[in-house]
Image (cartoon, rainbow, N blue to C red; front, side, top):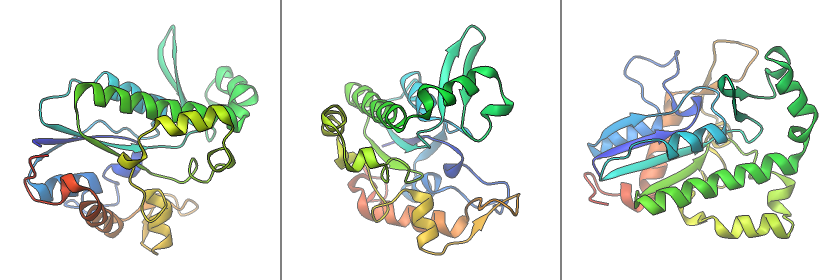
Length: 224
């Protein structure tokens, strides 16, 4: 392993309220392993965007991919104007397409969960094809707590069976942010009305947790 390359959304990015030297947990892992760190994460990224970033990234030999899956209710679509992202928190102020999507197919849990599972499966297939080692985590519990994840029909059960769950690490059964909240770590926010994101201590603890759980991270300078 020469580099860790991360993909995800704002929970794995440096928060503006962090101290200058504070790092998000994938970067902490890279520092502890003494390998380079590159992030392709962007704020408000959807899982569709995360998968696109993975499939279009030029991986190098001995890269290790670290993917933090985001909210399944966010989406990205290709239009004549390029890639467009929508999410349920802001779509009413963006454009008519977002409103039509969330009042149409995007309102259904089945749409949200089935697309999210397919994005995970596509990313796994691509990374396996390139022989790029990787781990996945969730930054939230929206998929894990979904009724359709817990009680899948035949189609969803098939998707769930195809996914390699050994490569998906949960934080004591949770995504990163719910786990951090359950552990009573501080959350930081620019807006006092919003819970914000886990603070630096949560990122340090998350890095330690993953180093203990992931064989490739167990030894500094691992050749995995």
